[in-house]
Amino acid sequence: MIYREFKDAVVKYAVENAVTDYELYYEESESTKAEIFREEVKGYSSSNAMGICFRCIVDGKTGYASTENMTEEEAKSLVLRAMDNAGSIESEEESFIHKQGDNYAVCGEEKEAAPNGSEIIDMALALQRELYRADGRVTDGTQSAAAHIGETYAICNSNGLDLEDKVSYDACYCLPLVEADGEMYDGFADRRGNRKEFDLKALAGKAVEDAVSCIGAGSVASGKYTVLISGKAMATLLGTFSSVFSAEQAQKGMSLLAGKEGENIAAEGITIVDDPRYEDSAAKRTFDGEGVAAYAKNVVEKGRLVTLLHNLKTAARAGVKSTGNASKTSYAAVVGVSPFTFYISSGEGTKEELFSAAGEGIYVTEVTGLHAGANPVTGDFSLSSKGFLVKAGRKDAPVKNFTISGNFFALLKEIERTGADLEFVNGRFGSPTVMVRDMAVAGNQ
Image 1 (cartoon, rainbow, N blue to C red):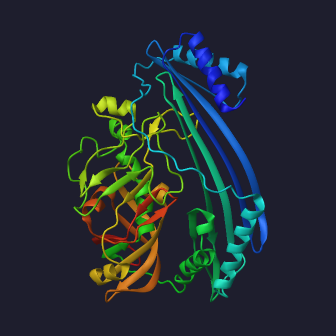
Image 2: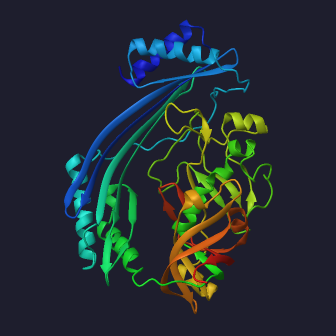
């Protein structure tokens, strides 16, 4: 059976069993990936996976059942298992099936055929060659990879919704290893989107420069500094603390932003956007995990918290409309809340102008240790970092093995300037370079 045939079978059995409130959620993904080590193919994989989740409300209780097997018999079993699951639920929490009436954006049609395995391998090999050409110090241990990913999301329910999104994109990344004076230095760069728009030479050059710029990195004295946090480092922080903008977390008492809508929670120059169809996003969506229309919104606007992110359940509790941010970590998971493409809007000024404004300080290019060194509930963080000194208004010598400490909520309020250099990590979280004063830095005593 294909999905459409299986969907019709499930609906038929739901009706036969007098299930009047139900939802069928479908995910399918396919990927082709090639990994290169030295100048040979280290790994190659091609995979396809799919799954379906049926959710129903029986006597006010919600039952779930999932499957990866699309047959007539499984369609009947799926409905019966979900009904049985609903009967064993003791929770009195209200559940919701979305109604029709939203205005949905239209997904763009695929303009090009997906690349075959040979094309993916060729792209990864070409990227690897560009790494070795970029600098004579690039050595063994250097790796590159390329991939094509295709995803399908579909949802239908008893209220007449019948939606489908198809997204696909190419991706590549490289990790050069540079040897200098007996020391090893690594770099990283990646790209997502249409492979025909990839400049592999420029991407390799950026990654190698990332590694080379760290050669001879020294230490920094402990103290309080004016700190410039690069777009990627700040985007990493935003991603780590993104759960604080979830109404689900707020209603569980796990976000300090609970009840702060309408209040100033950041500096006036800070606007944070959630956009499921961000122009440069590789995976645009038109609806969320419950079939609510997904749309762009300012979560924080000029420092003021406009809204937390909601699904249908959290919105009902708060007496507001869903923001279209229902999410599922997998097809079989229960519904949660998460952002789509989530970023701090660009400000004004180049990095050089921010260096000039800082005068003296530290430019942080990378933060690590986020799992152990960041607490999304309290907002506290203490993260191992690397970057560059800023002297006389210019980027100066590289430094490493220092720690920046602070509180995410306080950091948002203390951002003095934002650059125009918006960057993204993992294709989802973005930020320009930001400048803060008097940040605690732990280095040499």
